[in-house]
Length: 141
Length: 263
Image 1 (cartoon, rainbow over the protein chains, first blue to last red):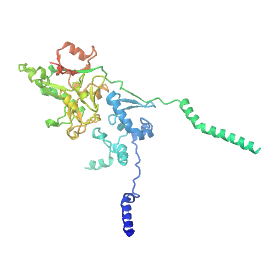
Image 2 (cartoon, chains in turn orange, cyan):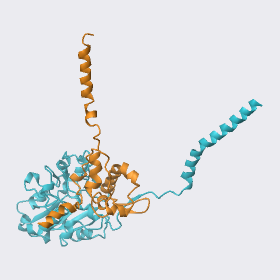
Image 3 (cartoon, helix red, strand yellow):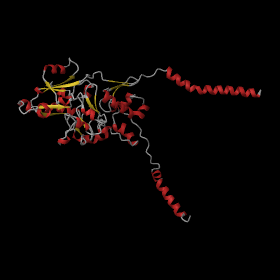
Image 4 (cartoon, each protein chain N blue to C red):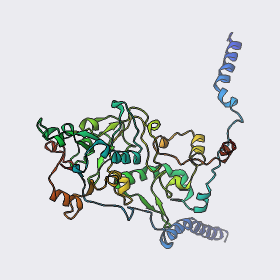
């Protein structure tokens, strides 16, 4: 046990390195993003399914819809409460993005926070975002 | 007396506990039976959707004289489906394009064929075969034949192996060797684009038929292209097939193409 000091020092360094990510990020955790619904979505009040189910299962629903539309050519959906929807991600007024108009607000906010990167938008075309702040300087020109 | 008191107390306590324990269970039963449930969600077709048992097309080549006559149809198709305009021949994406007789009807070509046919440009597209080779070749079932005869692609599932391209005897399929987005002049927001590494081809405007519209090329053709139900003897395509001599591309291969040409 002649190396007691060296071992203790080594242990301290080891623990310090292993726990580095924890204390380095201490207190820096970003808060969960708050979802801002578009005016249109607020006015519509109800979605395809209740809010809680949509939050948890929208990816399964989209996957199922994709097969229903492409393979069975069924493109209309009537929810339990009798409301009709177009089974499409981004085409038409009755599609998902037809109501939730902003991709950055509605999709990206949570996906970025949860660090998931679905590749819907490599093919599907998101509706144009309305950015009033960016439009102003252009008007002045 | 002490004993009997304790005994009766325990009896009452036991029964009470049992009663309290069954309440949640009874509640569940009461809820499932008593309350009226919401109707289940339904999926269905648009009531305007055009439906056929087997879709087919007749192209009247007598109405075309030059390449310029075919441009409007090709442009309408490619605009509707966000087909990129790539000039490099190996990278070209084509849903509907033109070619000459000797390439289109390879099995019927001979050197003394009349001048009109020899120099006439023909419109070519996916033939939506009855027995499509591409569907058999596809390892992921990304390409499939619908019950109404339309051979479709599920771009989501395509892994870009290009077996279907090798299997198609008509060269109707194109591969995205590079990201097509920068080469699309005007994006049609109602239809997705494709991504790099995906095969694509004519989809018989399935998305337009579903909302009661005729295919884009047919709309732009001034009646030179007609689509309809091949299994309905009263349909316009059957009437055209009855009253005109028509040919199909490479019928001896047995794929059963559904596109007919009046020559």
